[in-house]
Image (cartoon, rainbow, N blue to C red; front, side, top):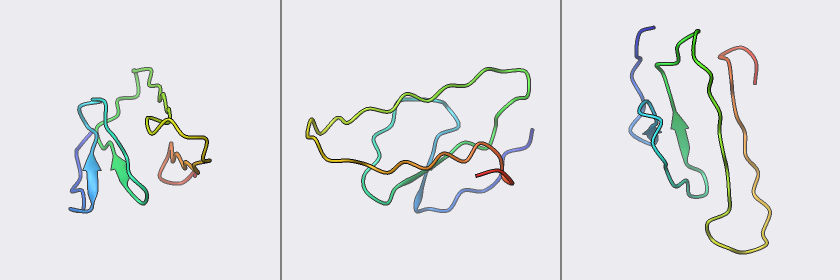
Length: 63
């Protein structure tokens, strides 16, 4: 797969590293491989009981 440009306001997540998202942040991975297994683990590092909405788009056409 070919990597595409990522807007400056988005976090590049192509390395699969641990990242911290703040309200309104977007992380984008553009180098997924069809023969790999991927997983996402999300937790509240602020240690409060506030809800957080998380949207994961696993395909450009299937939100």
